[in-house]
Every structure is written in C-alpha cells, then in structure tokens.
Length: 468
Ligand SMILES: Nc1ncnc2c1ncn2[C@@H]1O[C@H](COP(=O)(O)OP(=O)(O)OP(=O)(O)O)[C@@H](O)[C@H]1O
Ligand SMILES: [Mg+2]
Image (tube, rainbow, N blue to C red; front, side, top):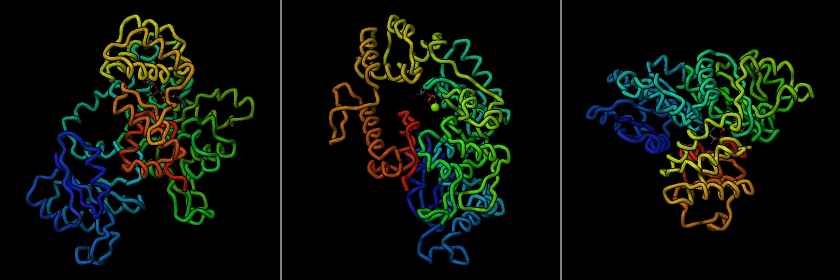
C-alpha cells in the first residue's frame, strides 16, 4: 500500500512514517504540482492532505491565494482527476467547518491533528475503513478478541465480564467500571471503545486524578480566547476532539462537587459551553466512567452527588481483585513472560498463585518484568521470590543510580527497552508528567512519545499536554 502525504511541513509525513509499518510506503510532496506529477505516474492508495500551506504564493493553486484553504483546492483538483483515490484532510482547527467543507468537495474523510496526537491508531483505522474490503485486515475485524487488546484471563469470572463488556459495548449506554487499583479498569474500558461502533474515532482517557484541581474544568470543557488572564488562544474541549469517539472519565470519584454538577449537566444535555464562552456545543461522544473508590460510601458521606451517581451507574461492571480470580494468574503470567521471550517454571507459577497481589495485575506484571530482566532464559521460583520481596519493599518504577545525572540505575542485564522506559519515565517525571516539555528534551515527535507512553504503561501518570 502506498500513502501520499501532501503537506508543506514534515509533521504529517513524520507521523505516518513512524507509525505506519510493514508493507506500507509513504511519499511526501509539499505542493500540488509535485504531488500531481507523482499521482499521474505512480499507484497511490490513499492521500493525506494538510489544510494550511505556508508556501510561496506562486505555488498556491487556490484562486484567492489564501494559504489557509490551499488543502481544499488541492484535494478538489486531485479528486476531479482521480476520484477513485480516497483523500483524508488533516486539519488543526475548526472541525465543524472542515467537516462541512470536506463533504461539499467530496473529500472522503477528515481527521483533526489533535485527535491523531491523542490516539495515533485512528489514522490506521480510518485508512482501513476507507479502503474497505480491499484490506485483508478488514475481514478479521469481527474476529478481534480481547487477547488482541492484551486482555487475558480465562477464569470463569473474567470470561463472564468479557461477555458482558462485549454486549454492553454495542449498546450506547453509560458504563461505570469499579474495582481496586490495577485490576484492569482502564484496559477494559478501552475494549468497550473497540467493540463499539465508535472505534474509528478517538478514545480519550481523561485521568481526573492526574489533572490539578484548578485545571480540571479547563481540560474537560476547553476555553475561549480571553476567558482568563492566561487564555491567549482558544482551547478545544476534549469532548470536541473526541468527536464520535469515547471519553473515559477516569477516577470520577476524584472530581470535586462543583465539577460534578457540570458533568451531570453534560451527561443529561449532551452539550456544554467552553469556559468564557456562550455558545452551546453539542457532543455525541460516548461517556464511560471508572473509579477505584466506593462511590456509594462517598454519596452517603456527601462527597459524591447522588444524582450523578444514579446517572452513571446504570451499568456497573465491577472487576474483581486478582486474589478472587487466581485462576487467571497462569494465563496472565504466560503472556507477560512470552512478551519477554522467556519461560517460567511451574513452581514459580504456583508461588505467584499463592500471593495476595494488593496491586493486582499491575503488581503481578511488574514483578514478572523485574524478574525477567535478571533471568537468562527461564524464570525460576528463586528469582521470582527475590523480585517479589524487593517489590513489596520498593515499587519498581523508582530508579536509582545515575545516567547523565538522571538517577537511573544501570545493570548489565538491562535491555535497551528497559533503559528506554526508565529514561522516558525519568524525563517525564522531571517535567512534572507533562508531555510537551518532555518531547522537546527527548527530541521525538508527540505521536511517538504518546506511543511509548502507552507501550511502557506510563499513561496513568500523565498530567496533560503542556503546563501552559
Ligand atoms: N486482563 C488483563 N490482562 C493482561 N494485563 C492486564 C489485564 N488487566 C490489567 N492488565 C495490566 O495491568 C496494568 C493495570 O491495568 P489498568 O491500568 O487497566 O488498571 P486500573 O484498574 O485502571 O488501575 P487504577 O485504578 O490504578 O487506574 C496494566 O499494565 C495492564 O496492562
Ligand atoms: Mg485506571
């Protein structure tokens, strides 16, 4: 498959070439003329066009010589000659206007850049959707199972949860996930998005406990320019960025009573106004909720609004702690060990089955990870016991020692990936868990940083994009 990117800058091309792997080629041109020559000569399966082109005026093809709408003119011209090639418009602002315009011009789809940065995989999903049956991956879609999302566990309890999740995912109702820390609420909430008809749109995990209280409203609802002293530009709400996707209000129990009222209103009216704004904006995103707090107790103590509790608890899926479903442990361990290209002895698994796992699957996986680093090929009960004991004393995500003054302990057993995870975690920590300053220090694009954050399971700690 070949993707053609038409963009004056490198952002979209860099994003694609890092993200799209295997048998996909990517070509890049910065103006209509060069791109057009290429399309005439080569086979192109899908075209991505930026909306704004800051190029020399002589290279612009739109009649009004307006840099801000050049993308429309390019897409329109290419569509006239090559109506068979799907075109996706990538735009930074004004989703409503872009949606309208793409429709008028017969452009096949548009994606907001902000949405791509939050959920890079939507690009692949949308391309696949446009290419339809021509893509062999498409026919497997229906077969996508929990395992493909990394969710395992073959005990009775887990199986019945999986069946329920699949069923409710397809109904458009709210879901509240409850359960202790580390049981997999985020992971399963994410599966709801994949099993619903919304997976071609972003999944936004809004970690309410990680956002400072003063910024929570701003993060959820966005603001208009001039809404407060620092509001130098407008900021879109995550509800706008999500479009027809899913928003997970994660750790909803951590929301203060004042914002709870606003969330209730949002759920009831499916509309909101940005801070400092007057215009009501409609949203058709699906809302799901998760918490490790006992909301019922909080209601009794006046810490959580009763009306909001009733609203969000139409479907409660309670994920049991690992000690109540020990039969899942062998499978979870098997996959975690396999990912690390190691084997594990039966008595090591027996030992793991006997532990309490107060940190649930997160803790179990961490112990396996730290043991795997130290073991050659086979994880033995001896190595597990020692890693587990250390783990109880000291969480594994604390690093000590020194790499370039960053307090990262080096050991000869450390793989490149271990070091990368430690380094990224440390830089993010030094940046107060904000992404923008970290991406500058690490000198990687926002998209690849987000991908690594996901891969190394650091997502829960992220406080937002920038400190503003
Ligand atoms: N069923 C599962 N199979 C494999 N891995 C899992 C499963 N459930 C959870 N995990 C892993 O456990 C870790 C914690 O999962 P997750 O973040 O979803 O938990 P959580 O319930 O949201 O925790 P918290 O309340 O602390 O936010 C993740 O690394 C995830 O990959
Ligand atoms: Mg969580």
